Image 1: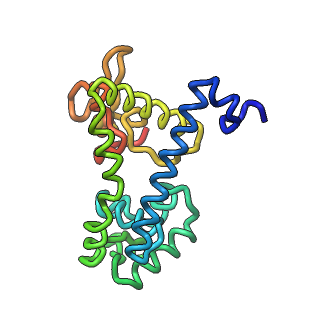
Image 2: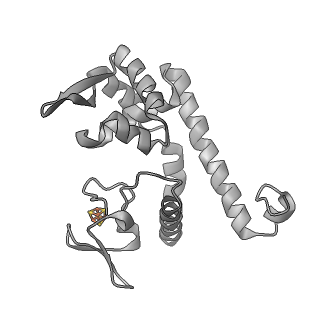
Image 3: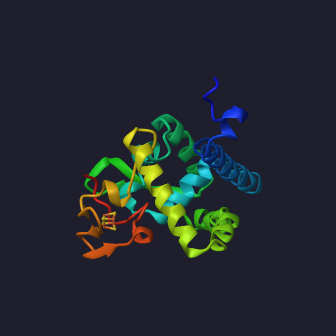
Length: 200
Ligand code: SF4
């Protein structure tokens, strides 16, 4: 196990290992912050994540199957989480007008209030990022974008709505371009979660 990033001899002699260890710490912060919200609302972390997803995404994506893929969970696990949200009257099911066997999920006013209460749970990170110099932000975002794309290509992040996986994305070796919005995309304009994304 000498090559483990958690082996401190290895970690302290490799910037790659230190970056991976740093990413693990940041991921841990999200977990801690979500659990804080969980204690305050009486909802599980995944239930809060589902509410936040429903609040900010198109109704065609607000279905059990899509949510399961989004959060890398099984359909029964997401169904159980949604069942509780429906019982608590935070979410309602809307039957598809063209297929009565299909339905999407929508926030109720009570669900929206939970979103208003919990939606800024990651703001402490936004504040810290906001203090970085612009050049550092650009470098950090570019690196994260590449890492996320690489993880998607390896099947570790399933659903992606980022430019590099979009039908409208073009790259001539120098300039990124959106064929739909008809704009060049500087590094910081590349999107991770685009409402207009069209899967390849
Ligand atoms: S439609 Fe959105 S995801 Fe697709 S290339 Fe344009 S900005 Fe990127």
